[in-house]
Image (cartoon, rainbow over all chains, first blue to last red; front, top):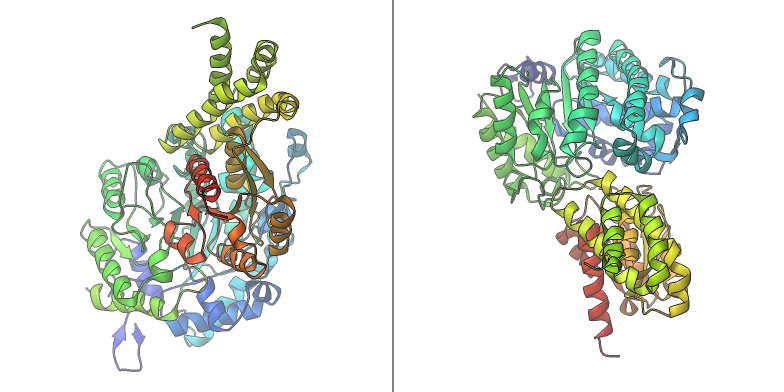
Length: 380
Length: 220
């Protein structure tokens, strides 16, 4: 339990997140906003500064969580340390996550030239990511008097995204249709380096893993391509992480996945951090897969900004994270309440958060509104 | 259907079906009996419109769009010399690019190809384009439309910077600005001061046509 200054005891963020990710009722709904930018902005930092000085990144994460009171911290997540170690050249913008500058693979011959066996503790920037996790752990233990009160969420890249980074996304999309066998072969090869990285991240102290797929949504590829090509690898990756580490797994289907929610649920994550989709449709499809014995989801995270979309089966005219970035605190509180009701009403656990990462420039008061809503409307 | 028409239909079909070799072969044959302009207007443009419609309807996706665009581009390459000689009137001129800091270029490439297929003269500046390069391109190319693309929440605000720079340089009234990208919506487009927003490549082509029409109907 957590002892607050106002003499109220609550669960610690660690207890709260772990309970929700095990399908148990915590004291109240947790909040995970994928806190990349707010902690940096709280300390007046640009991302590149925090990348070049990992201790500054750790400081921002720790102080940001203490300021905003959401329920987990994150490591450098959403980077490309494995892809970089495999040969892709990344561009590091001043205030954004790295992007692919030069893909590692240009021809099929290049596949053989890549050294696929990499060591997360030695190669490229992977040790820097692990250092941040270890430092986060140290700081959290220090602050908790020897107990860790706040969990560390780390990140793993699913094979389809990894290959996109190795090949360049345009090439990736064309081989999905033109050369699916090569696409499959590349995903198999990319699978192990990232699995090794996730294992090292958990060894370093991460408590839960966030896996995302930004290239298999209905905005990108057909349901058929997802079903036959990328979903099986996604599932294999998630099941391997569970087998090798035992930590809870959150999956982020980035974008609009309305026509394939059944398949998403079958990838066996514990929790889904939802993009801009109809929350009721998502809950209905995920619960149906659970009831059929095909899925094991216990919680829904994210989705703030899209609780009442104008929905067609495939296209939805919705922006990402609009409410959190540009809405009023009142609107955010109202949407959070609606989200909690929709998710908790289905028997799943609700974890409040936006429908993509909380974007740069999000007013602090809006993040406060999410935590406020969890305390006001999500208390059990 | 006459043999001539079936040839044009064959080109249309091969582009929609992403068969680039067949598109090239049939276009070569068609050039023996049709003017390039007719092949463009009756085969390539309708093909890309069909591809765009299928994308909007959720029947085609990014891979299919890219492959159809490759087939269309291959066919268009064969037509270009003849089109240049025939002095065909372009639907309009567009300068396009992804804003600085953002290396994502698939979306803007698809828009460029769709626009080219619809008869526009397109100058792509690629991805990660500094503001000054946009300004320079507007000055030297004198386009009807400047197209700005961004995928990320972190980079989309650069669109506003580009539009403000156009204003400072006294260029804003000379052109129309259209914006697009996964993160964009009409509200953001309005906030940035753009003249139009399109959610995908097919919609961008329709938007470009209407922007050119409104620009050309402006007094002065």
